[in-house]
Length: 78
Image (cartoon, rainbow, N blue to C red; front, top):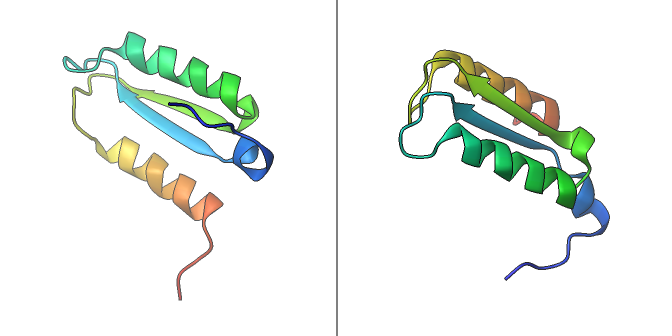
């Protein structure tokens, strides 16, 4: 069930990451998901990153992108 997305929720920042060689979740599904997200919230706040050669796993480049996203959107922890 989908609830309404309104107010501050429409402005949430989203980072979606996907490997272009993922055998479990094909890149096409990642692309469809990001388009659905863009139709539900402010599309300018949705970032979709793909990683060449990455399977259903992670890589250093992805972790650096996640770190930059967190640093940009969350307040620092003392």
